[in-house]
Length: 332
Image (cartoon, rainbow, N blue to C red; front, side, top):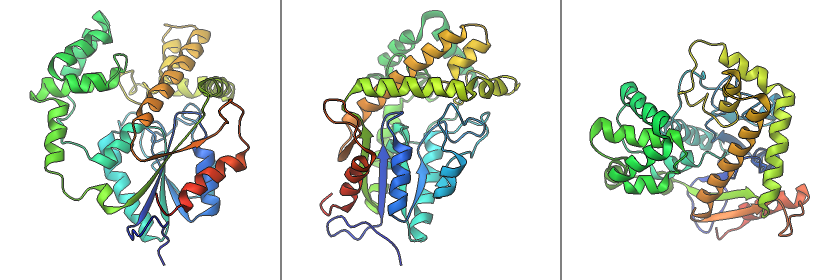
């Protein structure tokens, strides 16, 4: 018999989204949910897909992976880029398979673009053009990424408004799309939405939760503590193994992952190790800020807080109770 979570009178199969900024406790909460409900976990993380990137991505341990079925972890070599479009195809297939097995899919992660791609679909985009991308990289090296942002703003102000001037990967791709086909990402997405048929949201009843602290300072402290622990656990050796490969380079999404690219810069001689660690902590905090910005504008979101409003950390049982309370409600 297929297990479903009841929301109102809906008989649609149920899907749970568990989002949140980095270091907020998503993995731990997902595992606790798995202790109480028949679920399978789909990772929504742009770094966990890569094999060999274990420490710096905070990949679940072997014991955690064995506790409940996990998907979209260790599915790509770091030399093979994985995109939001790839995720959408893979996640849609997995959701169907998990529901067919009588379980509830729980999608867990902080790569907000992946969640958005699943909910809203993806426009057909032109293939990557190495020559155009190289030209954009050269512009960035000569004038900085804010100059790339300014150029994008001239042709696609909607996309430019949604992308931070320092978010190099998204900026590069948005400008590359325009230069390669003469249409902006915004235009292509509008065309895709106009022709969209039965969407993911039409097929499933989705409970969307986000786990986060009230106190931004608490999150900052957790980020720093976790990254320094990653260094102690051997992150430097993990990145050095990647660095020695001849097929990996700084233009790849895997190498550009937050926490990895700073150690890569150290190995390149651009930074001292102390500088790399500090820059990685700052970059991770900036990532968390962007994730929270996405989430504050996310519709139909239910917040699970890990602390009280005064910043005092809540007991684990109270955090779990918040999430299970949302899952048990009939009116969400």
